[in-house]
Image (cartoon, rainbow, N blue to C red; front, side, top):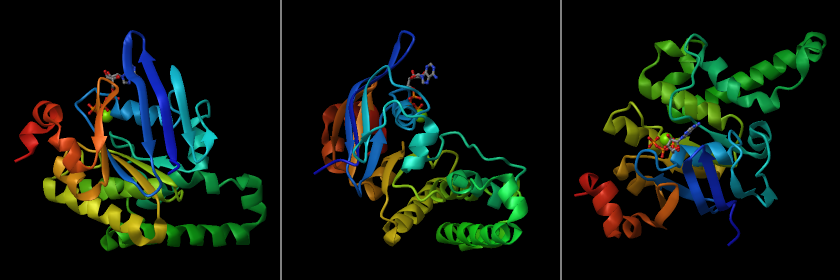
Length: 259
Ligand SMILES: Nc1ncnc2c1ncn2[C@@H]1O[C@H](COP(=O)(O)OP(=O)(O)OP(=O)(O)O)[C@@H](O)[C@H]1O
Ligand SMILES: [Mg+2]
């Protein structure tokens, strides 16, 4: 099996702190991989390094057969890795449409001169984009479609999260990183959002997901494989049952959340 994403000896140091420590982690095409571990174990740093926000101190990242270790965030996004952020990055005063379209900039490079001169094509493109955003919103919550022109500040927390997921999806990613999409949501809302994302990923989109999530019930329901990090190292990996059977994992990190 050749991995879609393959990280070898990935290391990220911040001064004296080693956030990722020779991490070897593969993601296969079609995986819904759960990335779990205690606070500060390096989960978000892993996303930041793979997506080019930080350049790793050592190690390599290979995506879809290409070494992307030294690529910029923009280049990696263009190659097909999209993400959501642990802390919301919505522009609250902008509309739902605008917030989603921020994620589509790789397809919006016609430039101002072109847009001024080719008014007809520009209008057609705007219409196409609006339909596309509505389709994505509909996939997560049909009620959001008619709110496409409203500012995001008027939406509930779960709808804001949906908008963030749509912003990642609008670029048609090959690989989707979700960093604690459930943050700030209730138990039921979290389950609903995950189900919606899974339906989208099954619906012929066929993308691969890495999900950082503290809620182990969500991990159990939606992932086919988990990797547990601790101090930037891989503590164990396998399916949910394998990982949660690990006595160290169970006691140290998951104990209170399992029955
Ligand atoms: N830009 C940075 N500068 C310095 N230290 C950082 C930076 N980013 C992360 N760290 C440190 O790296 C370690 C790993 O952080 P990271 O955010 O990856 O953890 P996490 O597993 O996502 O935790 P959480 O579950 O709380 O989100 C932490 O000790 C954190 O303080
Ligand atoms: Mg984090």
